[in-house]
Length: 210
Image (cartoon, rainbow, N blue to C red; front, side, top):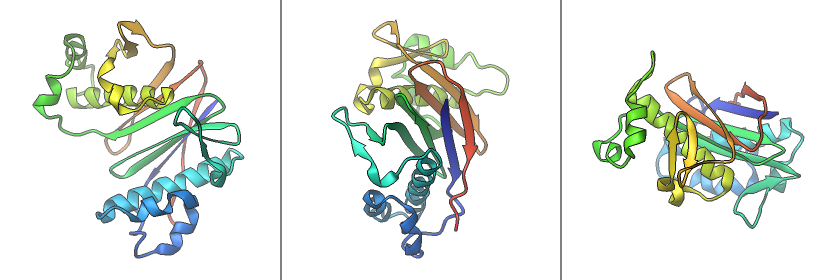
């Protein structure tokens, strides 16, 4: 079972104006919360930090005991997790096995980006089903790629090596050895979770205010 926690950070105050809320953020992340110049970014990072602490606690783990392995992936007390945030949403996926998650706000895509896609990806994206738009499908595919690279621990530099076909992840012409689940969140966000074996997902909203 994979537990996926998400939160809306728009209700939070600027942490520079409410520094007491930093006590809810794992100590190693507090400096990162205050570093951005933009108040909205500080609020987003504050919400992500609170979500991380609360989510791990609900799964019986301690956010103060997070360690980064040789593969560059964070873990704590035998638990694997992946944290992502965009605009006013933060998402945390927690599992006993390797996991990666990515959330992105659906937005207009520059024409130069469309041209970088393979022909197969362009055809799939523009073959929209009812309720889909090319933008929403593009962002959904993007989150699949990002979640896969977080799952493997490789990161964004390998993004151009990944292709989405028929909703599945391909690398070097071969289907990737993983599972991916994608969905749209309220407010115009796309979310993907990448994981090792077929498992059930439980989606839970967590409040970060107060």
